Amino acid sequence: MVRVPGTGTSTAGSARPAWVVPAAYTWVAGFALMHVLAIVSNGGYGAGVDPGSGDSGIGCVLPNAIVIAICCVAMGVIHRTTGPPRPFVPAWTVRAGAWIGMPLLVLRGAATAVDECLRLTGAMPYGMFDQRENATSAWAQWSGRALDFYFVLGAVVLALALGPWVRKSRRQTSARP
Image 1: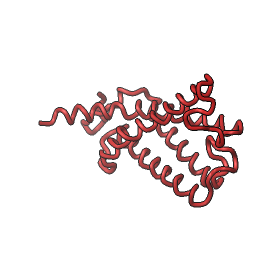
Image 2: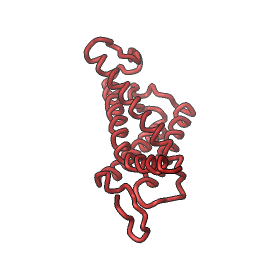
Image 3: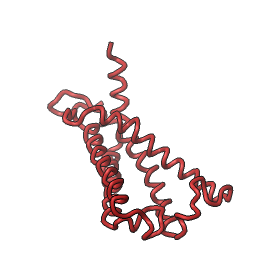
Image 4: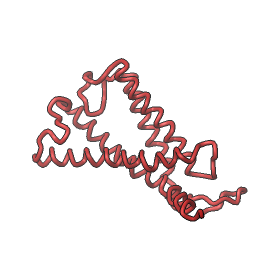
C-alpha cells in the first residue's frame, strides 16, 4: 500500500503498473469516441456491419448516446479508484463497474472469439451469430474482429485498473463486524 501524501490514507496504487490507469482512461475515451463517430456518420460505419447498412436516425443516436453515458460513468469509476478517496463519486458505481461492466466485456469478447474460431476452423462457416447477411464485406469482417479484440483488451485493462480497489474494498467489507 502507498500512503497518499498529506492525507495519511493508504491507496492501492502500488499494486498496479503505472501504465494501467492511463490505458484505462484511453480505452474508455476511445470507446466513447467510436460511438460519437457512429452518431456523426449516422450509422454509416458500424463495426461488423457493411458500410451504409447500419441503423440511422434515432435507432443510431439512442443506443450510442446510452453507451457514451456509460463511458462517462466508467471515467468516474476509474477516477474514484486510482488515487486518494474521492467521495463525490459513489462507491456503488465502482462496484457496478467491477461486477457488471468487466464481466460483460469479457463475455462479449470471449463469445466473439469462440465465434471467430468456429468460423476460421470451418466448424460453423457463418459462426454462432449467423453472419450470412451482416458481414459480407472485408470492412465488416475486419472491423468486427478489431472490435472484438478491443473488448477483450478493455476487460484486461479495466481489471488491472480496478482490481486493487476491488481487493481493498473486499478486505474492508470482510473486516467489518
